[in-house]
Image (tube, rainbow over all chains, first blue to last red; front, side):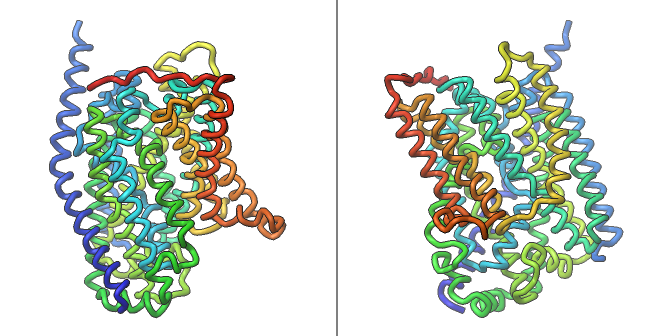
Length: 51
Length: 495
């Protein structure tokens, strides 16, 4: 294998680790944001539904 | 046929969950803000998940896989350039911060603030045309991928594609951005899992040394050096870098996620961290394509090689998860794109032709009808259009039709006091000419006079669009400062 080939394969491995690492973190923390978004929207609906 | 009962069970469960979630989220839509930008309350992590999901479709895997198969490791440069561009936009807030502060919902809305309603109409028309043409090939390539992975013929796959489009159009039209954000999150989790399954399956079957040696043997230096590769070269590298910055800041489906963010600071954070995934977003599927080169050798149909390999090496059960991941990727992309283009049609084209402002409920109704019509277009266009070059280059050139003019108009509008209406018209028009010229003239390549032959080089046409747009904006504005004095933007909100 040439040096360039090795360099690109190392870059590929690093970018995959970064991608899946961020995906794992976001999958957990995104749930909190989703709950917050829907709770906030739900409260607005209750206020607008009130007589 | 590669698909077993367990695989089908996973796919059906996923599709059913998407329908249920997407339609359930409709209850949260109260007004136009809720429909278009989810009330501008999307937090950073959710914003990142939905932006990543939007920017990864099955077509993304197909065109990157194709590039990996035909160009080897040298194609990886695209992922590096995209990451640099998005991270820069996120770090500096280039354009996205200003748009979010001004609480616009579409890019052409900014044109009206800074230039005029007629510029908004022209910009909206070009954006709509470029955007819909751009997504016209998505369904075709999704069909290629699924057909090869699942091992079914084109008729069965067409039925799956139609079902998928119907589901996406239904929840997008009904629930707008709220439905999209909720379903995008689930789709982000499923597509990440699908990508992991595919990558692990490949690494268990092929070792890195054999992959590297296959690239060297099949492609030589062109497989490693993007400048030496005849598909790429410096023209391509500069075009893609410019294009990535422009698209990062101004591609409506992605930018709309910034516009839905809870604040400008959150918008920047979303772009920065999404940018950090962009190298992997491109390089992972390109790596699969390179693995297909090692698995089959050269000579396969370029777009089908990688999915055919996956269909053969991913075990039953996991294949269902991979396909669910691909469907998730597609659905998140279609929903964002369909909402983006139908909202541009409603707010920036149709509404701009009216004397008086349309009611919010009318805008929502037009957006819903536009979403359905775009769905039909996808089904029809995908069947007959033949792509002139690789899918990636078709997408980049149709994208350039819009982003080059938009970059000139929005960047100059935000950061250069002398930008005026004449410059905006010139920038938008000239930016669209080179890509449009390419799409038309390449169909008659043999009849094109030698003096115009450069337009049929996709890399030249793409790069030229940016220079023409910038020249139009700068010279058009400078030549007409007295005739058409610049309008100055009101101060943006401090949040």
